[in-house]
Amino acid sequence: MKRVLKIFCVHLLLAMFCCFNVIGFEVRSVRAHDSKFPNVLFIAVDDLNDWVGYLGGHPQGYTPNIDTLANEGIAFTHAYCPAPVCGPSRTALMYGIFPHKSGSYGHHEIYNPANLISKDQLPLNLVFQKSGYYTAGCGKIFHYPEKRGWDEYRRYINGVTQKTKDELGKAIQLGYGVLDTENDSETGDGRLTDWAIEQLGRRHDKPFFIALGLHKPHLPWDAPKKYFDRLKLESIQLPHVPIDDLTDLSEAGRLFAKTRVGFSRQDDHKAITDVEGAWQKLVRAYLATSTFADANVGRLLDALKNSEYSENTIVVLWGDHGWHLGEKQHWRKMSLWERGTKTPFIIKAPGMKGNGSRVTAPVSLQDIFPTLLDLCGIQIDQHLDGNNLKPLLVDPKIAWDKAVITSHGPGNFAVRQGVWRLIHYADGSEELYNIESDPGEFSNLSSDIAHQRERQKLQTHVPQEWRYVMGGRFKNFESSFAEPKE
Image (cartoon, rainbow, N blue to C red; front, side):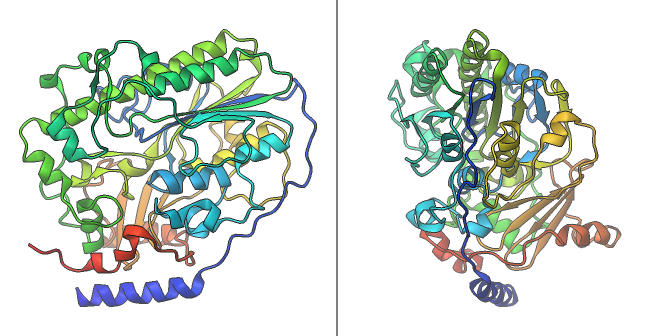
């Protein structure tokens, strides 16, 4: 353990010397737009993992509206978040900068983009506004409020709620969020969806960028009763979680499995499995709130189809990161494994040749910013991390072997390329998985001599420099690598 701590300290010192500031650029040319240019309907779903129908992450996942969109557009079956936490993932997507470059790692105020990112680095919605678009947003798009770039914006609209705190422990004790209403429009997310629908019903004289950020299935998992009634508790299928699943992990890997927000130590999996029936109730509640989110997506998509804008609107749907419900003996987000980083991502663009297709190559939510700019004919002189996915939208079968990078805290990275996933922790330890043959990531192949070539290939994509910013619970990052007390 002393050796691990020593290695980790060396990495921290290197990180402090390697930190650097993000350099932003202003929009170089603002193009005039009229009705010829496509509109954008931008839908974000909080904490939605791959338990949706078209991804098949759980056999009881029921999301017919998202599945319909997947069948109509280009659905990415292996899309990954920039970071497995709301704030860093959304900051990266909306500003176009990887978390390890900006230093945005968590939810402490120090990670507010206003403290880390140059004002010259314009967020996506502001780029659209400066390019002649009407911009309207509601719900959770950014984690930290971004007032720039909106013609109209509503963060929250109150509705019927269950009075429970955002904690798994409280969920176990106080129930699973059955709301006393059958009317989706009486809920917070339902009212946000109504607001976005009202925006689509307006007469717009210029192209629009309309964003809806749904909060569910974020905790607490509350939704109208009809979404819970779809599944009987005794029918719930639990994830397969081997008892010895963590034995081939390093201390860093086991720490990630056993911790919650930041790096405070709490074994959520043991707490839940020690309560009879709690695991089934939580899985049911997550499935119910995911279907509830899907219903709101469906109402918005129906409104678009019935509007005058249906033939000239790009629809983008994404989840900000994955979510564990016991896999790897882990709960919540905040992991670098497949379940914590994989998320739904769909683009439906008018007239695109690839519509109706699946893309199996790994891609990143980081790719949304440059892709939308190309699709809408917007040119900017501003650095953007990520790849333009338009070639895949035109021909989903083209060769695409780009590495996807996810980070969680300074120095911790996952690289997904082809069928392989490498996890590299700040203390130097690693995990290697073949996701095709081992989708549950049960066998860590990092020490397997037969797979060192694959490991070394992915290692070339692990960033060697990152911005070192510590705040909140991440201040205890180093001490968290000590042996836990019995």
